[in-house]
Image 1 (cartoon, rainbow, N blue to C red):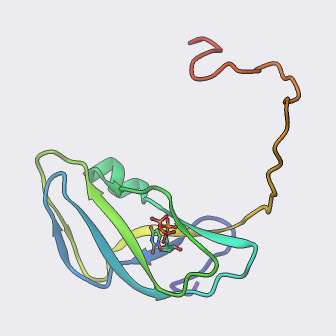
Image 2: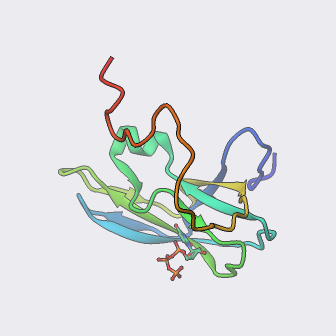
Length: 131
Ligand SMILES: O=c1ccn([C@H]2C[C@H](O)[C@@H](COP(=O)(O)OP(=O)(O)OP(=O)(O)O)O2)c(=O)[nH]1
């Protein structure tokens, strides 16, 4: 399997090309060295790695990061260390996040006077109870 592969079974790993010491509760924008040409009608989502998040509290400050198809710059990973006590050393070559390419539906929003009714209707957060 090549280093950057999107086989439909998960994310494509993104590697840091720099070293950086993330202090407790610090955030940093980390370079990946990757530039992409995503076809029109698709977009990229940068997602955290579950292992880094659950073991070290290192996740993304903007999760998910959205990569527009027209973007031609370097993919950057907005990392944050949510651990209040321990710093986290990002090393060059470390897998820090993952990218998935998703199809983006194209909608044109239309203004209307009324919306069609549903069972949920306007029931928002918690309206279906706790059980
Ligand atoms: O985690 C991320 C998120 C975004 N980007 C790049 C690609 C994306 O296409 C561009 C702009 O991102 P976004 O649209 O989220 O930024 P914004 O803050 O809304 O600014 P703007 O759209 O005005 O540039 O930055 C990254 O490299 N990494």
